[in-house]
Amino acid sequence: MSQIEALEIIGSDSDDTLTIDLSQGNPIPSQGLIFHGEGQENLVPGDILKIVNGTVETATFRFDNPNDGGIDLDGSKIEYRGLEPISSTISATNVTLDYGTTTETITVTNAGGGQTSVASTEGELTTFNNPAGTLTINAGGTGGDTVNVQSLDPSYMGAIVLNGQGGADTFQIDTVPAGASMTVNGGAANDTISVGGTNGWDSILGALTVHGDTNDPTPTSSNSISALGDAVSTDRPDGDHLHVLDEVSATTRTYTTNGSTLSRTGAGSINYDTLERVTIDTSATTGSDIDVTSTPSSCVMTLNAGMANDDIDVTAIGSNSVARINGGAGEDAFDVVTTSSDGLLFLRGESGEDTFKFLGTGSGLFNAIQVEGGSEDDVASVDQLNSTIFRFLGGSGADEIELGQTTSSDLAELHGGDGNDTFILGNGGANGLLGSFGVNGEGNDSGGIGDSLVLNDTFTTQTLNYTNANDGNIVVDGPTITYTGLEPITAGDSADTILNLPTALANNATLQDSADAGQIELISNSGTFEDTILPNPTNSLAVNLGNQSDVFTMNPLDAAYTVPLTIGGGAASGITLNYGAAAESLALTDSGGGITNIDSTVAATVIVDNAADTLTLNAGETGDDTLSIDSLPAPFPS
Image 1 (cartoon, rainbow, N blue to C red):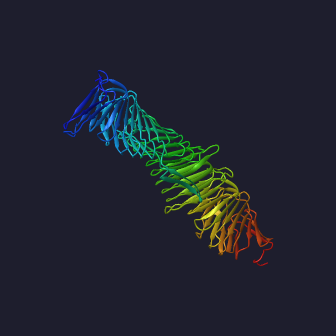
Image 2: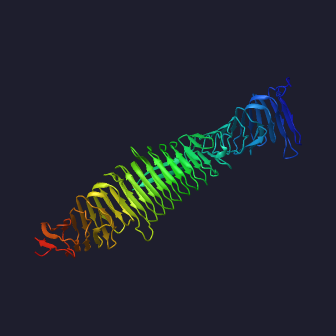
Image 3: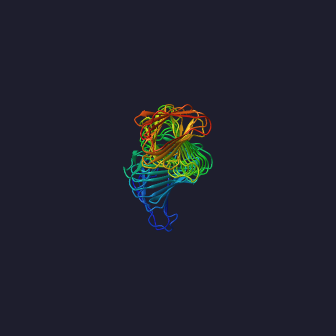
């Protein structure tokens, strides 16, 4: 053979087998060998090429089409035509499989006995000894190829490199043995890399690295969070997508993500970069601990939790990124701590009674954040926002949302959905509510108190502007809270409180003591505005009536109420002041400008501005009361 420079072997119409034995050295001529399988008698096994014995550094297999191609063994070349399977039992440190430009499906399986088989719809079935170095599979420069790694020898110890090259390729990685490593290079176009097969992430034991590489700029998906007419939006290309499927895991696991690594207890880690989308499906049947320490910049990350109770912690998300975390069924607990990026964060509880805690400290929470409660009774609490658009969607159920400290640049829009919902604004401090707020109670259950708004803060002045039975706004030292679809309101602590009743509706209002000490309440007997509970103001209280012949009644107020009450506004048909049972002296005085002062020795002063058609004073049924009239303004008689 040493005298032969080139060799061409032509088979017959039967099932031919060519064996190249390297045990006595390399028999391949210097200018190569060509094997023509020609026809075959049976589809399986067909014409076979076997390469046996010996050792090479690199074995490269080239596949031109389903039956033609070439093999390079450290520079010695074999060309073949019309073959079916190829079998190699030589020891090659590195094995490379080069596929053509036609769209094809490439499947990698464990052949047993320390061997790997790779089948392709556009190339020969090739079986070879597991390389100790690197197995490289090049899927081809064009065409959208599919590469399936279905099984590997559990004792596989080498590196595996999968190159998508050109085209929108799909990779399905079912296994990475513990002693092996695998790298997926998506190449050009929009590629999809799915990890986890029948056993989910449990079969990914070795290190897996995924590079999305370049991607097409289209198509794109729009992501947006809005509040009060303003929005933060980003259009992200669909691009390269890593999808980790672990729904089949039946054991409680901890999943951790950061900007470049995904990890799970009991499995190998997944390192990644240059991806536009990352999706993780956690166990469908057991509760999971999910720790999002960060997400990659300019990427959309989606985490789908399962049917049980999950514990989800979010520390930060990447710049210009989108994070979508879906709790699934079960009672999920979301905890979000301080984050400082310009990304968008979507949290969705879905079914189950879920809790959302935003533990912003220091500079508070940045981002645009949207929370969807789901179908049952959910609770959300936000410590602190900072330059944030915040949107809450309660869904069905009796939801509670508590929003603490905010800054002047914050925008918050809160929707209760169906059920009797509670909105709590403020953290009990002083002037902690800045920015702008919108509260929409939406639907509520029949019976109960309906959707309620509670102001848990202290203000210098709070002004409640009622529009109708369920809508209006509250101005608190500058910031405005606009609300729709509410029933009762609990105002905050303030020095001065102003209540402006609807001007275009006929109101019938009663101001009286509340059930709790230190509070009074304004009741709408006409159903034209929201019943309101008021902590006793420390300086003044004003009730401004409408323009439709309103009726106003004051019953005895809280025992600790001491500040002047002014009743003014439009034209009332009647004002009635009912005093308590204790003996008292009442004095009516014209203060000028159409204002009447009514002073009491045991109750606060009442100031009537633009007196009604009738003013009635009921001094109480017990005790000796005294009434003195100095002078009265028009229209009262002198």
